[in-house]
Image 1 (cartoon, chains in turn green, yellow):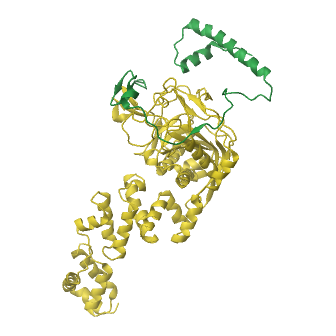
Image 2 (spheres, rainbow over the protein chains, first blue to last red; image 1 turned 90 degrees about the vertical axis):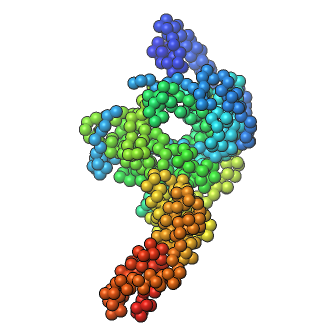
Image 3 (cartoon, chains in turn blue, cyan; image 1 turned 30 degrees about the horizontal axis):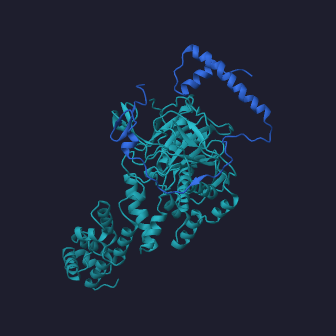
Length: 98
Length: 502
C-alpha cells in the first residue's frame, strides 16, 4: 500500500483551510500514514459479522416532536460575531476579484 | 464570459440526443427546523430564529424532527420508492458562510428512500416514466446578502451579510436517474416532471411547494451525445431554477448551447451554471474550488434511523389520492380533454380551479378565467398563477356577476384588472369603475334608436331581410355605451324595433 503523499496532505490542508509549512507537510504525511495504518489493522481483525460502528450507543430513531421552542434573541445570536451589520453576521468577501 | 452562438433547437436535436438528470429540493412545511426547535415561520426579522444547534455553537446537539422523517417517508412512498430499513445522516463538509457549522447535515450513501419512479403525463396525453434514484433528507442553508457590488450579486461584492433563520429548515432532495429517450421532448418532460412532483408534494401536505418562494427549486443536469452513442456526454448543472417555465427554458437553452459547443469541435466543461429569467439564458457559474471533495462521514451526533416496517405500512395507508388519479377524476367532472387538463396542471391551476368551484363558480367559467385572462396575465408578468393578487373566491364572484348578467365578459376582464391592481374586491371595482352593464331599458332603447337613425341604410337592409347586417348596429350601440351593454339584449331590441324576427 502506498502511503499518504505530501500532495494529499496539502490538498486536505487546503480543504480544512489550514496553512501548513513545507516541513509540516512532510511531518504530517508520515503521521497520517501511521494513523491510517493503525485503523486499517482494525479492519483486518473485524470479520464480516462485525458491522461498522458510527455511534457508540445501540440506539435508533431518537426523535423530538415538531414543537417550537424559544430561539435566541438576535442580540444573543450575534453576541459572539466578530462583525455584524443590519442584524446579520458580517463576513469578508466570498469571491475574489477574478 | 464567452458568448456562444446558439444552434437552433431543431438542428441540435437532429445531431444529438439529450440526457437529463433533475435534482429537486423541497423545503418541508414543518413548524420547526430539522434538528432543533427553532421556528420556520417565513418573514421573521433576521437571525431571530436561531439557537446554539443551528448556529453550530460548541456543546450543542441536534435531535431529529419526527415530522421531518415522516414527511420524507411519505414522499418516498408516493414516489414508489423502497424505504431504507436503516440509514444514517452524514456530514457534508465545506467552508462557505451560508452554513455556520461548516458542514451540512445530509445523507450520503444511505438515503431514506431509493429506487422509485414517477409517471408524468405530457400535453398530448403521452405518459413518460421518470425513474427516481433517491430521496434523501438534509437541511437548508442561511440567506446571504451581498453588499457593495452591482444588484446584490456575489461578484464584485465587498462583503456579505448572513441571516441564519433558514439554516436548518428540513429539505428533501429528490434525484432522478438519468432521463433517456425523451429526445426533443426533454425540456417538456423536465417541466412536466417538476409540475407533477409539485402536485404530489402538495397533495401529501408535506410542503406548499411554492417555487416562487424558493420552497421548491430544481437543478437541471443536461448532456448531449451523438445519436447512436451509448456513453453520456459531459454534463452541465444549471442551479436553482425556480419556476416550471424556467425549467423548460433552461433545458432547452442548454441543449442549444451544448450543441453549439460540440458541433464547433469544442468540449463541454463540467460546471454549475446560473439561469437568467430575463432572457432564458445560462451563464457559467463558480467553478467549485474542489469539486466533490466534501469528505462525507457518518454524523456522530445523531443515531441511525430505522423506520419500523409497520409504521411505514401505516403511512402508506394514509397516502392521499394521487394527483394523476385525482386529475383524471376532475377531468371527467369538468368535462375537459386530456390536453386541456395537462395545460391546467402545467399552469399550476388545478387547485385554484377547484377552490373557485367550491366558492360557487361553475366549472366552465372557473376554468375559463384561470386559463384565459389570468394565465395571460401571469405569463406577461412571469409569475405563478398563485402569486396573482386575486383569490379563487374573487374569481368566483366575477363568474357570478357574469352569470347574473350584471357584467359581460369584456367588463369582467376590466373587473379582474381592477382586482389585480389592488382596487378592491370585484364588487368594489364594479362600483368604483362604474362597470355595470347598461340594463336600464330606457337608456338602452335611446341608444338603439340613435344607432338606427344614424345608420338608416343598414336599418333598411335589415328590414329587407338581411338580418346579418345587425352586427354593425350592435357595434354602434356598444360604442355609444362604452361596451357596457349586453350585446345579446341589444340585438334583440334592434330587431324588435325594426320589426324583424330573429
